[in-house]
Amino acid sequence: MNDHSIEAINLSKKYGTFTALDNLNLKIEGSKCVGFLGPNGAGKTTTLKIFTDLIFRTEGKALINGIDVHTEKKKALAATSALIETPEIYPSLTPNEALMMVAEQRGVPAEIRKKKIEEALNEVRMEEWADKRVGKFSKGMKQRIDVASTLLNDPEIVLLDEPTTGLDPRGMAEVRDIVKNLKKQKRLIFMSSHLLPEVTDVCDEVAMIDHGKLLAYDTIHNLTTRISGGGAVVEIGFVGMVGESGIIKAVESVKGITSVEKMDDKNLRIRFTGGPEAQARILTDLAMLNLGMSSFRASSSALEDVYLNLIKETL
Ligand SMILES: Nc1ncnc2c1ncn2[C@@H]1O[C@H](COP(=O)(O)OP(=O)(O)OP(=O)(O)O)[C@@H](O)[C@H]1O
Ligand SMILES: [Mg+2]
Image (cartoon, rainbow, N blue to C red; front, side, top):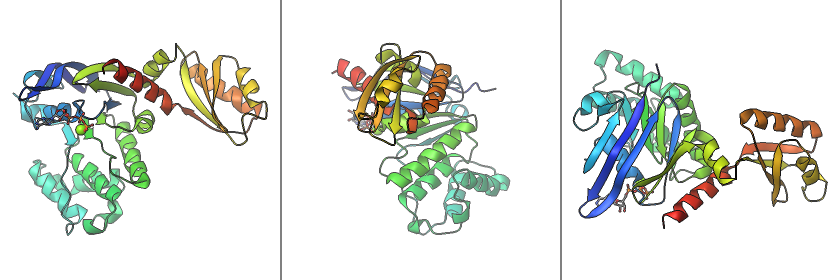
């Protein structure tokens, strides 16, 4: 069963007199991807480090699958992997060699190491590079090897601290795809990020923190719906100019759409009520209108609106 869980109970962390985490309560369960958002210094890395016992909480508890990560570290972390401030792989090693070292360190039984490495490299689609030197790899490829290293112990729970930061757009896309793929394997992924479009694309839910306090934890759909006055928000792109061709009027006429806003010459932002079924019907209705619609996507700026609103309240 998918009973994976990560739970912070009254979790606090002080660095000297500075409070980095302030009575954080958060329970995430199931197989899904949860984005962890918050401004610089909000306490994201601190939280992830506590959950992997890299640092020790000051108060409260951090539980993985109900087990305290500090008092029963081995048991709690047996099914957990994390990518937090990973050091660079030594350039003269190959992925096979580097991952063999990690597998040894992580206590993967000797007789299955090779198989686990092969599976992990397959999962990040780097199998063809298994015996090439890492020194020649792009940053995105190195990051994929780092992600592979987290998979060697068949984790149910994967914690990632800004996995795409510092990568070029192609590297970001590669790693984003890998994370999406991890999600399909019935895992719980908890991922910090500053990239809201990425989180909208990859994650199902988001937890937002600032000044070490939880601001919100909900599905992206619920959060963006709440801020938009009860409607979900979608951005639609068109081949032609939206202002000159009656497109706005036509879109306004579709049943269920409550507002239409021009974002720029080729994009509209619509709000509508109803859940995913309403969204599916609206997409069909719009396609039937034959307006030259070229894209229909969950609004990443909607999550940005939620984020900015919540963060503003805590200033
Ligand atoms: N070892 C430390 N000693 C003292 N203060 C620290 C230490 N580590 C983190 N802090 C402080 O704790 C706060 C939270 O830091 P943390 O790294 O968890 O933030 P973050 O949300 O990960 O930020 P970013 O988005 O910049 O990565 C920050 O104000 C930071 O300066
Ligand atoms: Mg951080």
